[in-house]
Amino acid sequence: MTRRLFKGKLTAHSFTTDNRNVSSLKYLSSYAPSLQQQIAKLLEQDRLTVYLLQKYPTVNKVSNDTGLRDYVMALKNQYLKKSQPLSKIIFDKKIHVVNNALGLHSFVSRVQGGKLKSKNEIRISTLFKNAPLEFLNMIVVHELAHLKEKDHNKAFYQLCQHMLPDYHQIEFDVRVYLTHLEEKGEVYKS
Ligand SMILES: [Zn+2]
Figure 1: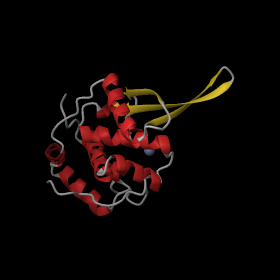
Figure 2: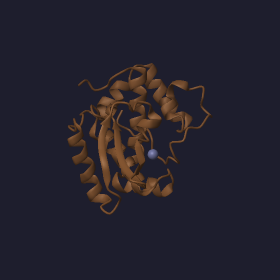
Figure 3: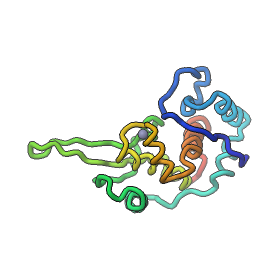
Figure 4: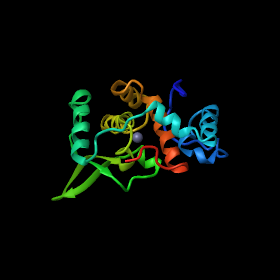
């Protein structure tokens, strides 16, 4: 199962309502029905674990907030040196659902001494702690791209691909991973 399942372009991770019948694949609902069917079939035949393990056999070594900060800052310094500073970079165990898992950036506004201060934070779901480096890379790239582009528009995805050329394929596989977590449980034992 090493062939690419998804080659193409995502417009956004907005969820369409067209494929409500494939309810278990809600994380993949913005993809072509044929792709969803392929994954549904793997799920049904109990082959989704093997699909993920063969394609992404090893987990990352970023195990705590310090490691995460180092990882994020290295990417930021490489690709987005001049973007706004990040006040906080942490793993957050409260982020579980995919809408949040894939949209973890938060722009915190706080009134301090009568002045409105905007702070950029990156919170990564702990679901990506014990996961392949490719998945963590994709999530971090997504969040970093939001420092420059707030919306999921063309410029946003171009920036994602600049930092991670295989971005779209990996986002697809991250969604497959999240589907697996929900339907079958853990893939990577800690
Ligand atoms: Zn986003």
